[in-house]
Length: 65
Length: 257
Image 1: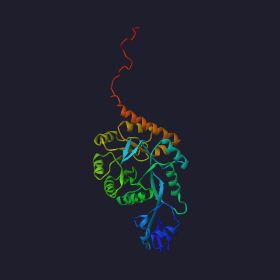
Image 2 (image 1 turned 60 degrees about the horizontal axis):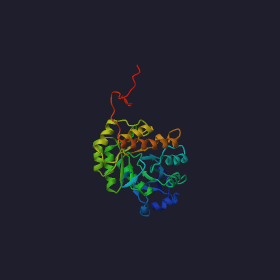
Image 3 (image 1 turned 135 degrees about the horizontal axis):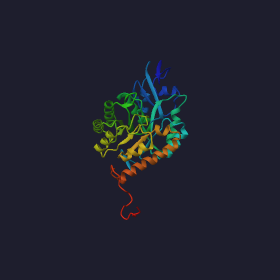
C-alpha cells in the first residue's frame, strides 16, 4: 500500500505505525508522530493500524524562535 | 527571580535558537546570553539526514530549559496537535502557543489562540501565549488558564522595538501581577532595556541576536541590556521635567563678572 510520509508517497508493508517507523529507517530517532492529523503517542504506535492513503507526519526537534 | 509556572529563573532573557550562522555560534550565543530558557520547534524529519537529532543533542548539552513553540500553525487543531507532539519529544509541559492569523505581519489569531489555550490548559499544558497587547484578549487568555502572557513588541523578525508603547504600558498597568514577557520585534539592546524599564518581566529574543554581524557579542549585549533595564526599574527612575534644573549646587557660586 501507499502512505503519505511527510508529504511524499512511500510504499510500505507495515501494518502499524511502530513497524512503519522501523521500515522507514527512523529506528531509535527522537520523533513525534501524527496519523491523519491526529497525534499518536509513542506508546500507542503499535496499536495504530495503517491503511492505504494514510497521511503520516514524523517530526523532530528543530531550531525555533 | 522570575517565577514562570513555579520555576524560578535568574535570567530574564529567553533566547530563540533559529537563524544562527552555525551550530557553534548558536552554542556560544546561548552561553553568552546567560539565558536559562531557549525556544525550540518541531519540523519534518528525514530518516536519511536526521538533522533534528543533531540539533537536539546540541541543545541538551547546553543544560538549559526548552520552551517548544507551535510556530507555523494557522489553526487551533494544528497548534493543539503540535503541542502534544512537542510535549512528548521535549519532555516538558511548557508550550509557547502561536496561532498565526495573518502572514504579512505574523499577527496572532487571537480568537484561535484563546480557544487553543483553553484546550491545552485543560490537557495539563503550561501555556505561554504569543499575543498582542489587547487587554480584553489578555483577560480571556488568563481566564482560559494562562498564568503568563507574551505580548509582541513588533512583528516577528522586524526589529522595530516596542511599536505600541501606549498599549504595552496599559497592559502592564492592567495586569500588575501577571508575568509579561515581550516576545518578538526587538531589534536593539536599547529596546530590551526600554521594555524592562517599563516593568515587563522578561524578553524573548531571537533574530536580533542570530542575525547580528557578531551574534555572540550581541547575545552578551542583550544580557547586559535586560539587566540594566531591570535594575533601573527597581531603582526608581526620576520624573522627567520640561525645563532645566542645575545639577551642580548654585549656592556659593563665585561672583566673577
